[in-house]
Length: 279
Image (cartoon, rainbow, N blue to C red; front, side, top):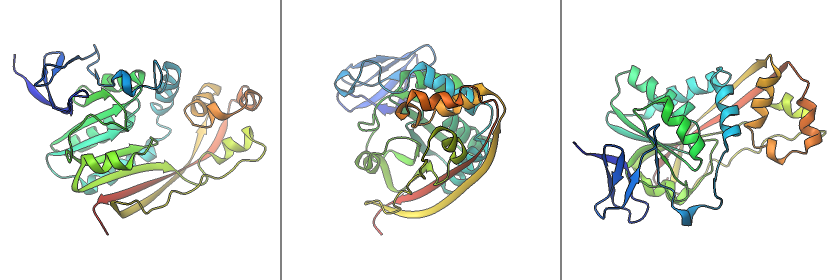
């Protein structure tokens, strides 16, 4: 059976991994079997802070059900256009904190439709999220892994995506090649403002992220806004469950949404694009 080189590296020794059937193996015979859906688990026990780290099944299902209805389709569209501006043939794109793969697969399909030859990969610390991502698109390599110990080689990526995910400057600088790009997505100031007004007595705006990041040159910013209308309690609860607010909110405040069957709320996102290098 023919082997091919994976975009991922061995989490034990750091050498390249070859894919042979359903196994990933390095030159030192460290072997990792892929799951039925196609992803590989490269998160070693010494880099886990819990038995099942990351988003659980409920959180992944809530986010998938919500996103698959297209509520954030306007963000995906602008994100695709933003990546298309900077991508070149044979680029390697890594989604660091890919979640269930909604944006990863959306961007990949957008570029493929425009005949761009690229390699795409995604990592996330949640095996439930990565399993869902792998089922979305079998042409993208997915692995369970930590953003703080990314299992890819130095300078191996042309574009790194970081969409609503933890940030690790040192690792991102390590894996992006010289002149490569980092594309971040963060909530805007008034993101989900109307939802917050229902849940909290004193809602607060999101703080903008400083544009300066050592080791990167700020290149461009897009602000993406749209009002969305949710017409079922299920969609409203799914939206709230996929936000970081949910698990930091008192049960009594969460219950304010329990009987709500319609919500019109603003969505606001910032797409920040950086290039690796010194100003």
